[in-house]
Image (cartoon, rainbow, N blue to C red):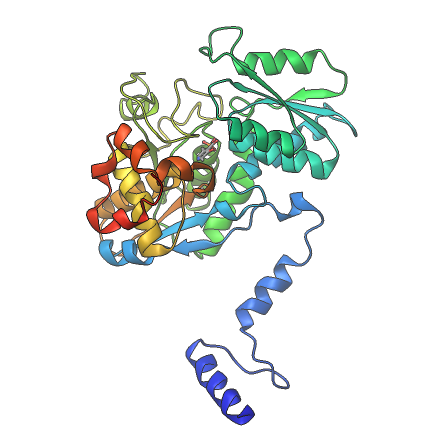
Amino acid sequence: MFRHSIRTFATSARRMDIVPVAGSKHINPQLIAISKAQGIAKGLSDAVGNTPLIRLNRLSEETGCEVLGKAEFMNPGGSVKDRAALFLVRDAENKGLLRPGGTVVEGTAGNTGIGLAHVCRSLGYQLVIYMPDTQSQGKIDLLRLLGAEVYPVPAVAFDNPQNYNHQAKRHAETLDNAVWTDQFDNTANRRAHLLSTGPEIWHQTNGKVNAFTCATGTGGTLAGVTHYLKDVSEGQVKCFLADPPGSVLHSYFSSGGKLIDRSGSSITEGIGQGRITDNLKGEVGVIDGSLHISDEKSIEMVYRCLDEEGLYLGASSALNVVAAKEVAEKLGKGNTVVTILCDGAYRYAERLFSRKWLEEKKLFSAVPERLHKYIVLP
Ligand SMILES: Cc1ncc(COP(=O)(O)O)c(C=O)c1O
């Protein structure tokens, strides 16, 4: 019995390219190399980043390209924004704006707040969050249970002094040893991606990357990754913005910075922008093009990624995957296209998988009939 199971394992080990080592252990050498390189994370902040780059097999076969997704949902706080949160806090420390026991204040309705909450707890800082009062009670509860002090305030435009970002800034100014981290216009955000996400993508692909695309909220991910990849490849890697309806960025980039037009609205969260943030300034002329992605396409891809790849993704990630597929089709077979899988569907499940919500948003028919089995909520 024992001999039989050893033989069976050895056979499957060969198939999986696993080499036998001393004794009865059979360990994949790649596992050892990765484990050694990772070592021990010295606290939560050391565990941010170094996420896997996942080949999206069905889309790769369909396009004849390598379509790869950076699994940012595997960060400790569950999203790409953990990277920005860490760099914003480290930047404030380095500038002497934040000392032990200090307070971080930010205006955010989503993942940046969650990332900051984890990072602040692990580094011993207080966190205060301002957000529009249109946000769900679930988000407020989550931030509070992660230790943040949360102020939901009336949802008004950015040019109104009562906008949540300006209130966050003023709150920080009233406290000693406190900083407003200002994710939209503080370029420490984009530096997070210039110094981590970009280099990771380059080395994970061994420099074999032809194109990168993602949507933007603050612009940190797109600008930071683009700058690194353009620099290291001497301009060879093509970089594209992916934009949802309701955002001005598609018109801005596709008109070479001349237009700032907005039309429609989107069900995606965390992406799309009404202005050119400092993190995105100077990117016209660097970005190679822009793709406008409809909610219908993003919703279909939420369900396709689940069914075909086993990936449970939020709508911004699905939009990115649609963009990666379209870039792959545009560049042609044999290219490698990378995008960002920003977060999972967990926080959005009650909408994305609800028949009533999909019908209300006129998106029910965007889900192919064969995938209706995943619409499990009323
Ligand atoms: C779900 C999600 N996707 C994408 C983004 C965009 O990332 P960035 O702010 O780096 O442009 C965000 C930003 O908050 C987000 O929450």
